[in-house]
Structure formats: C-alpha cells, structure tokens
Image (tube, rainbow, N blue to C red; front, top):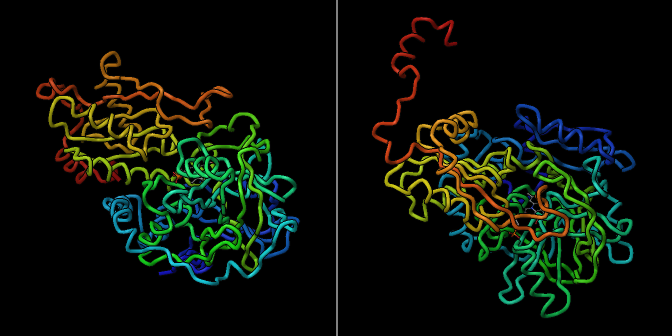
Length: 478
Ligand SMILES: Cc1cc2nc3c(=O)[nH]c(=O)nc-3n(C[C@H](O)[C@H](O)[C@H](O)COP(=O)(O)O)c2cc1C
C-alpha cells in the first residue's frame, strides 16, 4: 500500500523495472517526442525526465504512468503483475464497487502536508518556474495540465469533482487556461457558480499519484466525489489540505498545485493542442483562464504529464481498460443478458469505437446491447461506432471484428445512425464554432437472429483437429 504518495509509488515502479529515467531532454518538444516514442514501444514504461534543459536538476516531469497493464494494475491497487487479461478479470466488478463503496472512504482534511512546503502568492506566481512541456510541434503553447486533476465544487450540494482538463500556461506564467468541454461535470459546476456569484473557485493538482489521473480522467458518476473514489480504489481515505483562498481540497501529498478563480469574461486564446482523436484541436479559441492566487509545491516537484495524440498515446491504454470495465459493469447492472465482452479500442481513443460481444438470446437483443452501450452517461461522449458481435468473436481483436462485419452485417438493415448525439469540440469533424453534436453508427455484426439455426458454419479446422495436427507437427504450430 503506497497511500497517495507519488514518490513511494515511483520507488516501487523502479523496483519493478517499470520506470525509466531520462536525463537532459528539453521541455520544448523533446519530452513530448520521447514520450511518444515510448508509447509506441510494444510495452511502454513510465518515463521520469530530470535535468530538463533550462531547469535545475530535481524539477521533473513524469509521463507514461498508466501506459501498460503492470503500471495501471499497480495504480489501481492490484499489485505489479497484471496482464491485459488479469486486469480485465480483476476489473469485472471493481468500477461498480468503487462507486458503491466510495462513501466508506470519505476524504479527510488534514491541517498540513508536503504540498504546503512552499506557497507562492499572486503576484509572484510564475508557472514557468517549472519545466512545463510544449508537447507537440503544432501546440499553441506550453501545457502544464494534462495529467492534472482540476478541483471544483457543486454550488448547491458542496460535492467535489475532479476532472482532467487540458491547461495551457498563459500570461507568461501568471495564469493558465482550463479547457472544459460542455456537459462535463466540471463545466456544470462552473456554470452554476457563474449564475449565482459571477465567479467560481477552482484548484488543480498538477502532479500526484496516477490514481488521481485515473479518477479525474474517466467518467465517474456525478454523485460521487472522485477523492472518495480514489479512496475506494486504494482502500484508504485520501488526505487533503484546504486551499488557503478558496478552501478547495487538494491531495496533501500532491507535488504541485494551484488555486484561484475563473470568471466568464476572463478568457485567453487557447490551443491548438494535439488531442486524443489523433488530430490537433481546431483553431485558437477564447477559453476560461484561471486568475491564480496561490501556487503550492513540494521540494523538487514532479509534474505529471499525460499528453494525448495519435493513439497509442499516454492514457489511451488506461482509458480503454477503464471504459471497457465501466461499460461492462453498466450493461450488467442494466440487466443485459448474455454479455461476453466489451472493448473500447485505443484506435478510437477508448471512446469512438466500442465493441460489445453477446450470446444472442432473443430478437432485438443485439440492437439493445448496442443502443445501451452507446448511450450510458459514462460512454456517450464522442462515441462514433458501436459494433455488436457474436460470442465467437473476440472484441479485442479488430481483425476478427472486421471479419464479422464483412460476413454478418448487411449495411442496409444492420447499420443504424443516431443523430445529434454528444460530440466534442475536439472532434476533427466539428466545424469551427459549431455546436458539438455528433452522430454515431450502431453496427449489428451478429448473425441475423432469424438465421441463427442455419447460418453457414465458420470454415476453419475444429479445435480437436488443430490440437491433433499440432501435436504431430509441433514445428509448424510453434
Ligand atoms: C489526460 C487527460 C486530458 C483530458 N483533457 C480534457 C480536456 O481538455 N477537456 C475535457 O473536457 N475533457 C478532457 N479529458 C476527459 C475528462 O477528464 C473526462 O471526460 C472526465 O470524466 C471529466 O470529468 P467530469 O465528468 O467529472 O467533468 C481529459 C482526460 C485525460 C485523462
């Protein structure tokens, strides 16, 4: 058990051979490019950048923190030996459990913590005192918030939300914009504060145990505080310290954090930024910008980077696994029978391409699975294709899924399109200035129900025959 101390977790990652130190890279593109090289290795590692150009040794940036099953498993408190399969097995019921047990792990406010070692107040705030990367060549600036956890409070209920929203350094380091898409809980919080008070308190942790990145970066149900969710993941309550100005809670052992205010009219041009769709997000647009009152940091803070981009990217593996587990849990809870598997592919950033495998039980079962999966509150955002396949098709294997589509899906009857659904401004198909609707195709790639009895058999050797010839000619099967 590491609690939420990033440094202890890094110690364990190092012992497990999952942490790779990198010395001497520049914050200007090299940290980002090396991170990309890492994500594209067969098994990425966590990269810890130190001695970053123009910055003193000790000021570090971490990326790749949840980029393989061993790293993600450890972050989720499942030990250091997870594989894709054991991770998915372990997560079969976990997301539901974390939600239902969150109340048992309420975050506890403590008076002090390592985060408060150094406090800088306005007007001395300078975010560029830290080695904030310019991640991609086409980015419009330096992004201090990628693996961040932005803290907001529900005006009416006081519930705390954490969201990972990209944050660009503005005003030469004095402030940072925060890009929250419409419909996100953080956006709903801010809108209500603006209506009631004309401004909203906001805080952000910018370096922390990756469990905060997981909780902030996935769609946790709206009535659960992500701090309590992290507590449920780790099996112990998170300890927080209150921001001196807004009172918003921050992890007591976070590495680096800010707090301040946002106002509807305080905006700066933001972007473009290389996004999870694999494209740069449109043009520069006016985005809410935080009037930073305080910066808090530990000695030699570690910034947690999680830059998106063309997949695989920093958190595409994490999103794929977590989304697949959450949607599985949702379909089970909704009472869908015959569910065999769900996979939210990294090619679609864990959002846009969803495969559901079922054992068909009744007419309409396949469409029901597809419509449900495409529209859960925590899966609806930016879905584009939801494909349902029979249980003999492995949803993780895109070759098999495409094969099923080619042989079992008749486009004129088996593809339906939902229109004006929940899209995103980062969708490369969204026109500048347009409302972020999208459409999504539900693709029924199951054998037609009425043909189940006499659908042609799959033309492949039986398992028994394959086993027999493999025993006899091992040099072929090996
Ligand atoms: C590293 C990372 C960066 C993200 N950047 C953004 C962003 O800039 N804007 C946004 O709306 N969502 C972004 N997301 C997705 C949200 O964090 C995610 O939808 C989360 O569930 C939002 O929390 P909320 O539903 O509590 O508001 C990002 C996720 C991750 C993991």
